Length: 532
Ligand SMILES: [Zn+2]
Image (cartoon, rainbow, N blue to C red):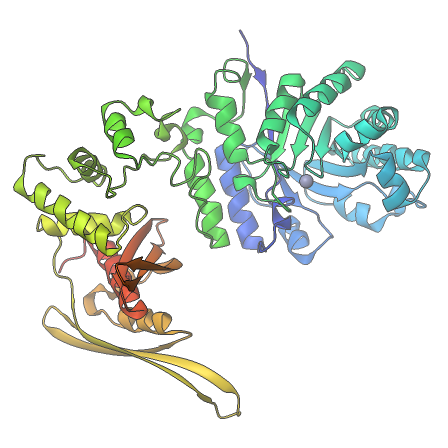
C-alpha cells in the first residue's frame, strides 16, 4: 500500500518569533533554518519581508537550503488599492523565496470589525492577491485566518473566501485555528465538510495551543483529509504557542494510527536528530529545555520510581511507549532515595561505569548517595555531579585543582557619579599541580563574581575551559530538620553542544553555588580528558 504524503510546514521563524521573550537575530534565523532543512521539513517560512529589519535582512541573503522550500509570509492586499500598488505586498512578492504564504480573513465578524470593509471587497482582495503571486511565478499558499470560527459563524462566507483563493491559483488552503479555541472533533468535522465541498483543493491545518490540543487538532485535521501541517519547533508561538512539530512529527512517524498510512519528508535517521534540533533552539534562545516535553524533553524517558526503574532495566517497554533512541533522546534512570541497588547499577551503566554489583564500593556509594540526598542533594537532574561522585568513589577522577580559600565581598556604595551601586568582588586562591593561583574578579552578584574569579586563571586548564558557560542557575531553599539549607543547581554547556547539570548544598548560598560551579568545571575537565 502506498502511503500518502504529509507536507510539513515550519513557521518557527515567523509565528514562533511572536513568542513573548523571543527575539531572533538574522544569524539565529539562519542557524534554525539550516537545522530544519537538515531535518527534512518541506517548507520553511522565513518571516515577513518588509515588516521588520531582521526579516528584510534575512531574506536579502537567503540561507542555502538543500530541500526545503523557502517561504515568505505576507498579508492579502489592503482595500482601496490594487495589488500592484500595495507597497507591503510588493515587498513580499519581491522576496527571494520559492513560495509565498498570504494570510487573509475568512470570518465575517473580522471583516466587519477589524477591516471594516464590505464582505465582497475582502473576497476580491484575496483573489487579486493570490493572482499577483501566480503572476510573479511563485507558488501561492493561502492561510485562512480564523477559518474555524468563521465557518461556525457563517459557513457560506468562509467557503466563498477560500474558494476565491483556490480559484485564483492557491496551491494550498491552510485552515487556521488562529485563536486556538476549537476542539479536535469540531476541526475534524469542518475539515471533512470543506474537503467535501472543495474536493480539488489541497488542505492544510495551522493550529494554536490555547486549549492544550494543537497537536490533537492537527492530527484530527489529517484524519479528515488535511495533508499539510503547519507548526513550530518546541511549540513556540504567541500566547500558548503553535502546534509543536517535535510532538507532531514522532506521532505521525511512530504511531500505528498514522505511520502505515502516511509518510513525511523526514527519514528515520533524521528523526533520531529531533531531540538535538529541539535543544538547538533552546540553546539559541538561551532557555533550559522543557523537562516534560513529549518525546524530546529531558524527562520524557526518565524513570524515578524504584518499581519503574527495575522493570525498565528488565525491559524498557514496561514504562516506555517508544524507544528514546528513535527520536534521539535518552533514557534516564535517576538515583533517588527510593532507589535500591538495581537502580544505582542501572544509573552507573548509563554513565558508562562498568562495575560488578557485588563490589564493596557499590554498597559504600549507595550509602553515600542516600546520606547526601538526606542532606538535600538531588541527583535527579544533576547527572554530572552523580557521575563525579561515583567515579571519585572508584578513584577515577584526578585532583585537578585544590581551592585553598575564597572570599566574596558585596559592597553597596555611591560611585564617582553619585549613583548608588552594588558591586561584588571575589578572590579565589587555588593550587594547580603545585603552582599557586590567585584571581580576583568582579561580577553583577556574588556568584557571578566567584564564577569569574574561579575560571579567570586555571593555568594549564584554561584552554579546555574556554568554551564553558553557565546556561541556567537555580536556587531552592530546603528545610531539613530545624535548619534551612540552600540547594543550587547549575546547568552548563560547551561549544560542542554538550550540556550537563551539577548540584551543591550548604546552609550558605555562596558556598552551595561554589560547590556546583567546581563540580561543573571538574566534569568538563574529566570529560574532555584533561591531564592533572
Ligand atoms: Zn498562527
